[in-house]
Length: 249
Image 1 (tube, rainbow, N blue to C red):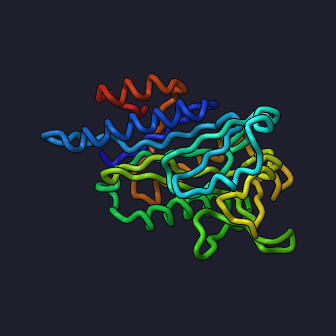
Image 2 (cartoon, one colour):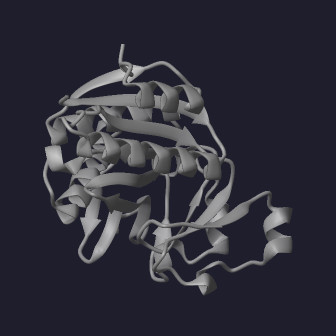
């Protein structure tokens, strides 16, 4: 099934969404190993999380610059997770996209996959008249240096892959409260700042629209047919996927 099903789940707690990704990943793996194999649709989940800092498996705890008491004061939580990369922030006003893809049916190259995610984000930023770019040796998408300031990160990325099925993904700052990044060393990088679409434009498009544009560009880059599902219920997504019912409309 050469289809990418885009599902916007609205605001969801981080841990529950992480659990959903792992469940969907394991079901996709089981389907592809069945006899005969079941060709599950590729999925793209869009969510917005309450404030949370996540630390990847190769990250450094010292890159979180505050303790439990201060975390509670700013209304944020902290999670150690299983993706690659260091520490980042997720919160309101941010487009978080979790592609759950069977790369065996697309291409089996994780570096190419990360570059493909970056390409989709760069194309989306261009839709909003923002010049995004790559920085050699660093994953994600950046803006500048330019007349507005030095190099600054607008989109963070981190993935995990098992049996060529991906989870985790990208976080694109749309109208994010950037002060939350003051409490971490973002992605373990000390010599660059962070920014958002709102910060660059002086106005904010709807996060839902931004996520939809990334989905269109990502599907095109992957050579997949994009379809959508209107549900915002994670349980419905898992039940429909596990039962083999169609997730697209």
